[in-house]
Each structure stands twice: as C-alpha cells, then as structure tokens.
Image (cartoon, rainbow, N blue to C red; front, side, top):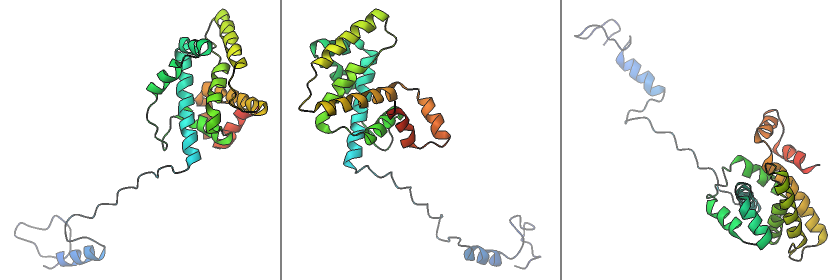
Length: 212
C-alpha cells in the first residue's frame, strides 16, 4: 500500500506511511513479534546478614529495648526484680519481643545497635550489663518519694551485683556504656533524624551520645 492509498474504510487512523515500512522500523527498534514484551527481572531480595557480630548486636539491642520498655511501662515488675530477683520482667518482655528482621530494624533498636557496635558487649557480659541498666534507669514521671525509693532499691541491687568474674574496671566500663545506652533509649529520635538530614553520619551521631 502506498503513502496516498486508503483502505475501504477511509484513510488510516493509526499513522501515515507504508505499513511494511513502519513494521520494519519497529523491528529495527527492537519490537518483539512473539507475544508480549518480556517482563523485567524481579529485584533481588535484600541480602541476609551474615556477620555474626552484627547479628549479635541486633539481638542484644532488641532485648535491651524490649526489657527497658517493659520496665518503664510496668515499674512494678522492675521493683520485683530489684527486690526479690523475680524474672517476670524478662519473661514478660520476651513474650512481647517480635521476630527480628535484621535488614529493617525499628529506629530505636537500630541506634542501640549502632552504640553496641561502637562499644561491644560480649555474650558472657550481657546478663551483667542488663542488671546494670535496670539499676541505672530513671523514671522521671514518678513522684519525688517514689524516685527516692526506687533509687534505694537500685543502689542495693547494684551493691549485690553478680559480676560473673568481670574485673572492676570492666564493670565500670559497662556502667558507663549502660548510661549512654539509656540516653539513646530515652532521647527524642526526631533530634537524631534532624541531625542525619543535615549531613551527620551514623557514627558521628552516636559518638555524641558516648561523650559526656
């Protein structure tokens, strides 16, 4: 069919020019003639974390976050732990702890993990570290009298701390790390996000919490 020819129904409404020529140009441009175009390959799934240290820190951060959250929301469980060494604080926390997706951690757990990556806690030290953290947590919303009573219980529990053969030096390091961790736990995350948006790196933001 030539350029000026028409079919029985009138001029073509698709385009001008010879259909064969148009087909040739389409084939040259890569048009497929054997069905629909091939689907683009599916994006690869995010790689699983294989670094044992990162995995350990992610797990520790999740446990710390869940236990501290439970202590804040159920202070009676914290008191039972401090005074009578009851374990319901931990069992209640673990029951609430969701499965951990190491590739997509909630913000606070992510920042706690960053701190633990900078200042590692070894597996055999973790129970001592958790005891220290519970003995140092402060509940600002309590009355003045209740704050004083809680402080006495925490002081007593810290005095009876089972150091698990850790040196006094290392226990003091864990106390300092615990305080920094509690600062991260209670901090307003919008401040961290604000700093990150203006160019601070992950490590720089966390280091600000490590320095008193």
